[in-house]
Image (tube, rainbow over all chains, first blue to last red; front, side, top):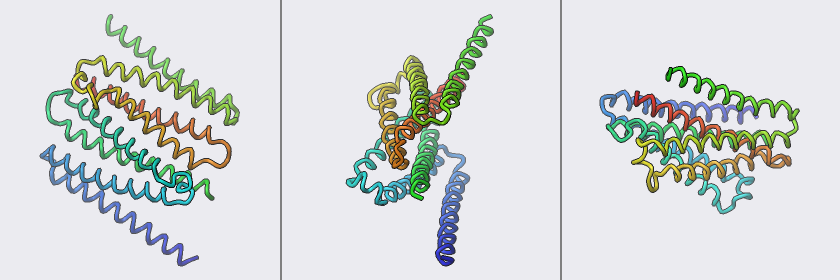
Length: 139
Length: 135
């Protein structure tokens, strides 16, 4: 029991450490490229891709539980959820980026990439929320 | 004079929104914890938010600055459809995660309200930003 708790503590500490290291890398990238909208947009894109990886992991971990697996054995609903999410994010962020320039200027690329990143973070939180609800209910 | 009229209309709009928002709170209070009644409160509030969202999309569509974006895949109509599809599929997970106690309908209605509220807030921010940038 003691060993298991210690193991959980080590794993969660490592996960927190790894995620804060990644966040530092992102901040470093922004600091290094603050003179260029294009380069900063690339930092946002890289971070958004990393978060998207977390989202896929989270979706797969939900799909792997027997409860959700019984409900959706072909994982069709998960694929639909992900694809609906990506459509919504891309379309909303196009609109968001466009709003900044409204057809004039170049800052919209940076704003669009920041919107993509923020929306990915939000979706990851929303998925975590579903996992937490399920865990609380399963107790 | 014109300025006063705009300020008055804005105050009227804000007060009507706070009345609407408190309608939901009142409805929940009146339900006295009955989840079936709370389903109706959530559905009513979602309907109200959907009307607001439709108005906001219409406002964007009428705005000449957004004309260039409002075509084909990037059309506002497509965006609205994508958002609805996402909301419906996300809420089926929310509902599934909570199911097993017979009150799935409540959880679905709550999720629909919350996600609709989020989208409404996003669109409102967008509109505010669009006007702020032009000033």
